[in-house]
Image: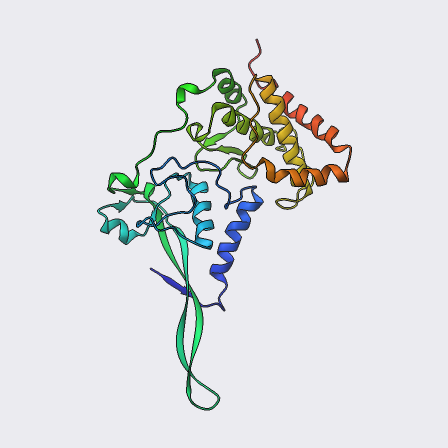
Length: 299
């Protein structure tokens, strides 16, 4: 059922803002989509309605974030009733995602002179949509995918064995790569979504370097308080160096992350404020690599 929220009730505004802040705190930027969705609708630039009309505004952020969290690669979202009208049905137990509709209504009110005056009152409604991957019985074109960029046979055996031996909880899906400290897992897109094998393993090396910072492992902490602060930049520099060291050890060409450039300014600021930190970062990166190497089977 659609729910209306008056501007005096900040529930929905708070929910939207808090969801985005939570992504940012976990190092996920819901407006950055560097990987392909591998869908016939094309690379996801915006989530799409059943009519292929793109969503706009805050709904783009909400549905991008949901796609990352749930591992959806299809860019199309529909309501429960639309699913039925299209001959499909939402699978039992599936949970929908919230989107919003903003508009203004005109309401007559008595003016100071006693005459009726139309006033515009803003309102916000929430309604629920489902990704087509949560719906059975739809036409094939809703789920149609293009050929993947990579084939599974292009996996590099010794790199696969290395990361498997670490014992890290590595999950595949969605369109973002990150290490989630609260669940202690590494998230990366599917292997097939990357431009080449090296890009996949470089991304995995970066996130597994983050994985070593957990208190039960190397307990590395630069005092990060929020996403994007100096502590965050320091940890990202360690992960970047760790990925470079690991790729060298594995005989792979380092591929910079798609969002590499966005870190440069923060790294420059850190290094300008602390000219010795590059030495500290390299030492931490080496310890991270040594830890990951120590988890490998001994000959």
